[in-house]
Structures are given as structure tokens and as C-alpha cells.
Length: 310
Ligand code: 8YV
Image 1 (cartoon, rainbow, N blue to C red):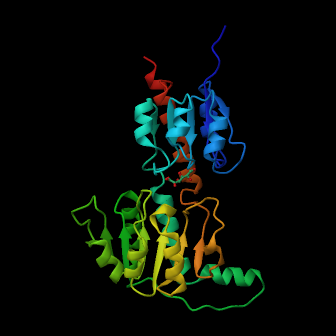
Image 2 (image 1 turned 135 degrees about the vertical axis):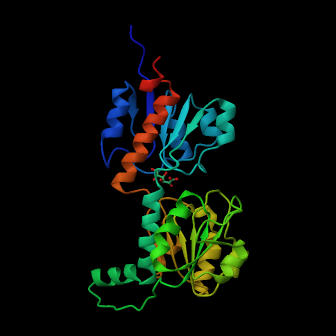
């Protein structure tokens, strides 16, 4: 009698939609694939309901906390992405659950989207597009990027990739990151407070679950600055951000990551806020790369990778 196949849950609802190859690789390894039936980020309760009998999860942004892990028979969590803020790493280590991620894959896709949305925000493209789709001919005056001061909060892979893309715009680049003490080429290292006081554009490229921009920091921002957040909603205090926009301290913002996803909160009502639904990694190239890596990582952790066959 042959053993029952190992079951894998697919967290990200878009897994395999850019290219079926990652899904085919999972199936070719003899795994039984269980789809996310909700086609959106799974909640804790949905995970608790779906996980019994599942050995591995190809994980998106769902809450893989201690309660979820402890109730499961998971052996591996393989994140499609760089951020691990939704995975309780301490609990995983204690419960013997291997955690893998794809730290390099999203860099170019997120950096390119950041540059695109920055230019879009400064020139108010989103506002004009919405107007014209409603048949209103509405010419908005925006700003140029060239010569402005940009603060990169976080100088990891993505922050540095954004810095490289900004080079042709001759911006003054400021950077702050508690893990970096040597200024990377072309970037002046500053404290967060110094940077906030000087920057025309603040771009967040950090991880974590606590606000970096709380009410106090938001009050230190140079009036008229623009904020970009393609990282995590939790890095900015939501009420403080709304207040900074209401007071005109922030001239505008682009958000790709939210406190609650799918997001339908107050920022949907602001013309000067550009919103995208957490799609930093949604280029076909990046999705394929991340998903293939996540499958390979999962197979390796389960001892099913080709080269783990001795
Ligand atoms: C998501 C991200 O993981 O890399 C990250 O941390 O936020 C994204 O790439 C991805 O979209 C989930 O499918």
C-alpha cells in the first residue's frame, strides 16, 4: 500500500497565476496541493480550519502565529517573499517548523514600483487619471523629482536598489538604518529625526511590526513632504498619517502595504494618496522567481529536493 501524499497548502491566492511552472513543480514532486479557497489573505480562523493534515505551507502574508502553528502538523513554512513579520519565528523554532523565505527575489520589482509611484504621486497622475475616466478634463500641477532630497528609511536590498534607480535624478539621498553604520556610496547617513526634518520624500524600506513613524515622528516631517510605504502598514501610525495629511504636513502619500488587507479604510477618501493593493512583487518576472524559489525551499526543507536524494 502506497503512503498518502504529503499535503501542501497554498497561501497566496495568486500563486501560479503568472506562470504555472511552480505549481507543476510541486505536483511533479508528488505533493497534494490544497488551494486557498477564499482567494484572499487567510485569517487565523481559516488557517486553523484548513491546516489539519497539512505538512507544508507556501505562505503569503497570513498570520502564522503561535496558536496557528501549535494546532497544526506543519513541518515547513515557505514564504513567497522577503518579509517575515507574519511568521512567529520563535514559535516556529520551538515547534520544530522550518521557515524559509525568498530574500532577494522581490528587490527589483519593489524598487521599480517605488520609483514609478513616486513620479506618479509627484505629478498627480492618479488624480488626473481618475478625473479623466469620469470625463473631467482636470490639469493638475505637480512637482519634479530632480534635485529633491529623498530619505530612505532602511538600507537593505530594496532601499539600496531604490537608491540606484534614483541616481539619474540627481537627488540628495539621505539614509537611516540602525543596522548600518558605514554610509553606502552616494548616501548620507542621518538619524531618522534629521532625515525627516530635511526630506521632500520619505521612502520606507524596512521590516517589523511596530511604527517607525509614530505620531511624534510624523510631527517632525518637513511640511509638504511626500511619504512612500511599500513595506508594511504597521510601520506608520494610521491615525497619525491621516492627521498629517489633514494638516497638510504631508502633501501626499503612496501606500502599497496596509494595517488591514484588503484595505478599505479612511485613506481611500484622499485624492492626494495613491493606493495599490500590496503588489510590490507583482511583476511576472518576480512572481515566477519568488514562487519557484519558494517551491525549491519547501522541497529542500522536506528532504524532497533532487540534490537531497543521496
Ligand atoms: C508578499 C511581500 O510576500 O516579499 C514580501 O514580503 O510583502 C510580498 O512579496 C507577496 O506578495 C505574497 O504573495
